[in-house]
Image (cartoon, rainbow, N blue to C red):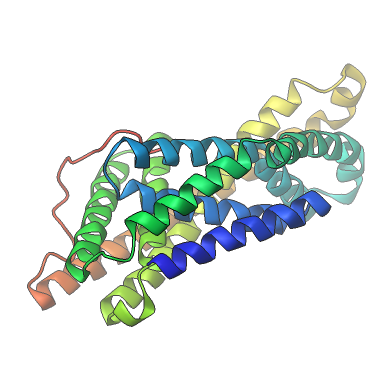
Amino acid sequence: MRKQLKKSIRKLRKKRRALLRRYDEEELHQLRIELRRLRGFLKQKTGKKARRLRCDLGKLADATSAARDWDTLVANAQRTIEPGDLALLQQCLQARQSDAHEPVLRMLQEEQWSPVIKKVDRYIRKHTGGDSARKRLEALSRSKERVATRASRARSTNDPRHWHKLRIACKDLRYMLDITPKDARGLDVAKELQQCKRLQSHLGAWHDTVVHQAMVRQLQYSLSPELHSRASDALLEWSRELGIARQRYLESTKSELESTMDAWSKAEQHTGASSCPAERDSDRSGDDC
């Protein structure tokens, strides 16, 4: 585990240097992945220090959220909006996107970045390396239990908040599986990692449409009167298409979720072990910290 986490630290530093040289959407995306991976690891640890470090990493990640949202929204516009309508909105979209990049670059340059990463690096050196296979399995079991609980709640309602919590729990499990040493991965772990990746992909696509639709609606009310009169129809159509995509992705997510839960249940029956813990109410606070 230590080897994988140290690799994440090295990747973070590399991505930071690359972004400070020149902003790149994919570099930011990869930096966010490594931040989430480390936060997922810290979430499995007890104590105030682990929680404080997780929240410190969360603050770094928060500074990148708007940039990621605008990067993906502009990419969506380029794929889906008619060329004539896109020409009307292009300057406005690019200006908002550029404004969202500024907090990222400030955060990477500020003194808060290096101390946080150094503290996490020291914590990894001190608190990994001695974990037994049993402890790793117990941590994975807790993460799976959290996914199962979130899944139960999400399936009982279309409330986006519950689906968002499921998305976070799925990310945590995925990265927990991902940092499991390869020589300690059995066939079950490898299968579960692929299942998590597929489910996370569906949940991510759904979440993007939720965020994008809210951004487009907000954009409608923030344009200048002149631009609004010329682009209002295009924005309404864009919002409508995002709403359709949102429902489509939600349905595909439900299907993938059923498939994943069914696979876990069958694995439990086959092994006789608690591969998919009971869907009981075992929430822990601070999911989004």
